[in-house]
Image (tube, rainbow, N blue to C red):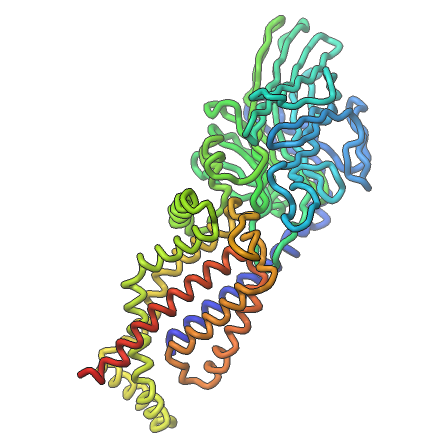
Length: 554
């Protein structure tokens, strides 16, 4: 009975969590009118150059200081500048000469769907419904090349063409003789770009300024199951706190303004990330967020202030990562960047589980079989602990007829009923909570594996067998959810039935409820539950059978 109550509480908690996450997505980030009217950045750096001087892309019709920016509010697109097309083995992207803005980026190895030929995942885009760009430039007390400046270019098309890297230079020169070369460098088999600013001061005064990079996007609802919540928003990293979420509501309410050494910032969504990483982890960068208008969110980083003497030059650089959240690559880009694969509160358990899953995949070359083998290893690891719980439940089932008998005898006297039940437990050496404790111990591990399967981009569009061609989407024929419901029903038959008739009725419909519930879950997650339930049934059946037969063997 206690086990039944525990299962009901877990189920209720799961449902309430899903309801809260759904509500949070729909309502919690709606801005108030006063927040919408906040248009000016008031953040100040500690080094003399105001971050408030950063010119932000506005999605309303406004005139910039140099008359080069034209933005249509209705279309929410950059209108000025020419477009440079760049193609590598992994990326297909566009750079707008207006500020050298990366306005479109397509991931060539990640189709939107395996079943429908509708193109590849577009991570960055300059469209109304998906405004998501990477921009940057220089700020100074005198003229400089910010992201509202139009650059000159050498040509319109670039590709690797058998090389290991390709560089795209953009040029700008002020009337006073300040020259800026902004160069993008892309690499073979990498999702990174190095952005370098070469500043040549041929004016008659010293140049003092800083470089900045920022990610500007609108909040777009990701398509997917209503029952699966993954974080979409900004992140800042520092040595003190390597992974700190800043959701869109936080950006509206309280703008970030902080100086950090060895940090980074990023925008996340399920499976994919865009991150800005300083050129040197020893430099103290200023990190900030902006909310220039409704449904427009910016997170960025500004370099330390540099002073360049007359007829001298300096370079300032930073790195951008845009692509899938592949842990092995992320951990090589910046410290803590792999934490953007968000394994939840039990990440310390989830990390080793991912390593084991990845290691097994190296042998099977099939993520489905890797999930099955990891589930088997977990069952072996927890075999004795599970056995203790199943033994307790089997004993409870064995004495249940006696418990029902005394319940009928003392139905009007609660005190005598409880005493009689405790006497039976003592006589049979049964702990009524013995079936719960082993389950409680295992829950953090199973929750960790849940997040590993949910967050790992490696499982996206991963084949298994037969009809399952993508472990990250629901089973198209609902076979796995049906099997999960059947295994849950069998497990109930092995457990002692609830003594309360109301609980018994509720438990009887749970397999149906969870079958419907899991029909919307990724098939990789449902595969794990089916295998776990099947192995649990086998172990519980053997233990229950041995206990049921024990009295007859005496």
